[in-house]
Length: 483
Image (tube, rainbow, N blue to C red; front, side, top):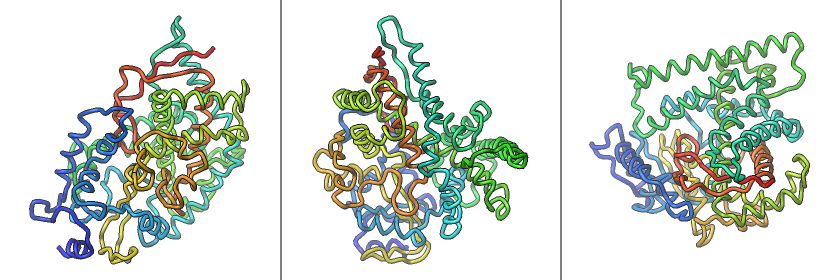
């Protein structure tokens, strides 16, 4: 195969594309390795076990072939990019290295809609329209909604406290509820009770996507009358009805002058997008933020509590800081920006457990990348979770929870290398990054000032990529009331 020959001549190594891999590539071996990895939990204090569980096939490939390696996704090679300078080029030159979802599993395409599916000027146009929804002044206006949601969760937990002042709670579903509710209210000025069915449908699609990404998506396979395809179409149609109803109700409110402030949905509807591209465009953008918006914040909160429940000294340091900055008053924007210790902790959590564990880009035509020639129709994969834990850049404690590494900020900790990008990097970094961090920080401050907590004996440490990185068996914690 010509692409394989070009890669090997430049020192890249990987499995040979043989008749055995025809059409399916390394999918069968990939699925087997994942099944083995997910069959066992790991020790939360032994982070060296994390990468082999989170990205087992990528880990195995690099372990076998080294940093300059590749594997096969059907007929297309996936080249692993481990060098920070090459990563920078890939993420900055987004017109040459594309986030092209035409090569993605058709179930995944129903989840990743809207902004990430566009390139070039089309992407830029949409980003400009949406940016105002995430400006600082808008985020400040969202704090009361964040606070209300946080109060709701904490009040539910307090009701569970027994006479001895403690209770065991799986915090995962509570954060799922809270972050979903916040997305509905802040970005779409919608009622969560009306949107709940949409979130449930999205969760079903995520489960289906995780199962189907382990196998090859053959040309035309989405048209086959399989049970998965039939279920996917049914879910997609129901999602369209729910989001379509939301759009029509908001358009009516806009016409009647009942919309007083611009949230994300209003910005989309008042833009030229619907006029130029039709309702399907708005549907795609809305579905994206319903899906991606709550998952990122939910998982950041869960992993932070898991690690602070394990490392009690850092929990106490964060608690003392929260009381020092806010005493007993509600959190505000200015105070949240003063939380140095909590920021260090959150940066370290995102280093070890980034929401997205890898970034993929497509090279449509033969392209120069540093000293290498990348053949046409090749995918490049940046394994974020591995680079975030690479001892060459982070030191011998790269797999340990050590927020002190961020004591002087991210630039100092990375020593100028592009080795930390939990929300992506460059012009196409996550538009909702500051939104997620602000909400998570407020909720964590409230929890720290109301409860102490530790990992429950029933907790099983099992990070898994469903779509984002989440705990496979939930996150049961023992909460103790501080009052």
